[in-house]
Image (cartoon, rainbow, N blue to C red; front, side, top):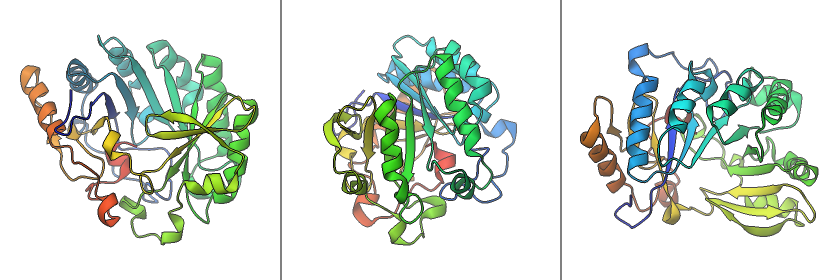
Length: 315
């Protein structure tokens, strides 16, 4: 499946909920978001059907997201359903890790290949400040549970925030020295709740190389530029939607928890998929792919036109 610019679309980010058990300052309102009525979000069967249609059109990788996907009841069963789709090559989940002590083994048994764990600080007090309600110890227990369950090459996603956590860059990089982790530094994007933040908060990922100049380039992985410390077991990735837009190589589409296809994270364009099946569903997905823009709006004027927060779209 290709868009009008010839980009191969092979990656689906599937949001299963807009709820979260944390309240990260750059993502969620302090008191959370209202819980939607049951009929307002897609059932597991609907999510499976939409994903099956996308896979039949050429999607090969699916990432289950949220909100926090592990708060969705039946998420392990959904993963089992997705893993059984002919043609699907990789199934991943992005999570804050809080519920992994209970769910790591069921997710692994369901066929999830890999985990990305969101972790913006290694300091307990700061973790509570950023998440408002969370405890770093819970995430660390989650990472241990994931390792016991057999997950390998877990990625840690760290959103860079100037004046908030940039003094921990070297600490995160050091984690990769003795462990086969991939630490990925992600540029903060001005959308949703943090759109009006001071510009100093939006730190370019190049700051990682400035702070740890001994990092050596070793290639790319999707949209990440990959680096490694000499002799390290793990790697460091830079994801730079602001300073080095990767639109020309973008291979992804998104489906929200309420069943809308978003061709681009930062576009207000949404294609309703609920209620469709068979060829009508496939045609709707292809129509959305055809509407994928050449570049996101952030590259033009620094403003997202997503129309929703990240928790509603899927991180």
